[in-house]
Length: 171
Image 1: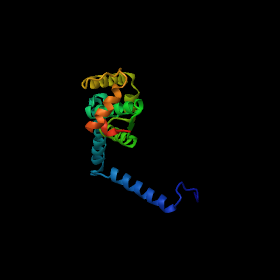
Image 2: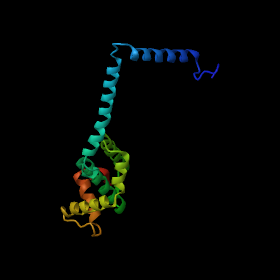
Image 3: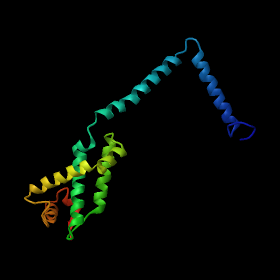
Image 4: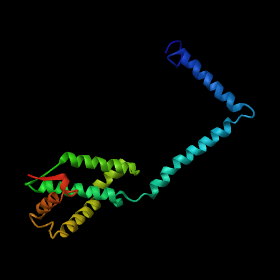
């Protein structure tokens, strides 16, 4: 800051001063169309800012968005099988990539990172996921609480090359 100016370059101060003077003169000139224009821009900006707030209120809870809930279910089941079954491994990079795609999609739908995190941290949602998993296994005649049935499901899913099976492999 040379010469006591708040600007590092005297030319910048002069340009800024000249632009302020030009704006002031344009706004104060009789018959100027600048003020109605600025007013309309401000009103439009206010309306644009209000639209996301209205649409955010109209969104369903993230757990009720099928493409997100189904994607999370696939990852959760594959991860449970991978961890509990010694003869089945997980395709971790595929699972991580899928989780990132789901997060990006949720963000695209207008959900914040905090809302996404809250879904994963919710005990109620974990309980719903467990019940959904039990029902899913029951369709194949398997019991979640029966030892070995989770691994049997894993081998079935790999054989079907399903969304869950794509995240797993038999060792």
